[in-house]
Image (cartoon, rainbow, N blue to C red; front, side):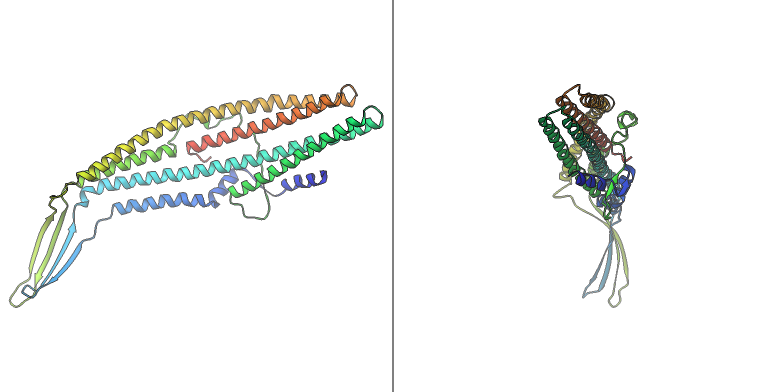
Length: 392
């Protein structure tokens, strides 16, 4: 069992190394989500160009039995001139919404990569801790065997130490399983396809106590809020377009008549205007006005929601950071000193085996809580960066 654990641990430490920066860049280049983010903006730009298209004229050719026997007429709609500015403004707002959606997709991708990376790092850290404690338990087994041979301890105490060593090996196997799953999830997050395993290289306490998004006073426009504001601007532009569309549609008409004995070609020019008998466009204006008011309300709610989410994320980041610092700088070193001192006293025959077990279990629990606190800090940091819509 010990040999197998050593081989498993060694296999997790060999492969292609990957830093967080490399993981982010690889995900941005290889994940299909990044392609979707670019396609969303390209589609919106195409829609904006559609809004600026000048409608094609209509050409009509008629023939008659009586002279003039032929007539060609060209009709060019002109009502688009009034609405062109508002329609293009709606198209620009749609591009802003697409950019916000693209930024949201990229931010969510960055959060996923960060969480997968640090979960893999935490899994490796738990495995190293479990392996170290298993080695300590094995050394206790050898120590109690010597003391049993010397007649200092009973066979019962030897069996208790062997049982503790067995529990340590079981916990090491559990840590190995979690580490392998964490590595596999990281490979999926960065779209890794090579046969060699990825090995994340980075400190679980990176950014702890340093500068970060929680302390950054220059807050840009987060993509979720930017998207809601863009929707409001687009709805307002469509409302302007609907109001301008209330003017009766105007078209230019021009053409020529010819054909028949003794007739001359006649050129005609005129305008056609729709008669607003059944509808004056008030229904479309009412619909657009309601949509604009709703979009403005959604944008206002999005700002309130963003403020709440930012406050919650910053509080979570600050508190997880505080717990992680205390665990790393105080609790873990103290538990390690207690365990070393207790084992030394047991080796000297000045204490029993139960205090040693208590010290080992306390160190295991405190170290595990430190790793959990550091991982919670990194996940809270990733969440805040995603809310802000940042990549770095």
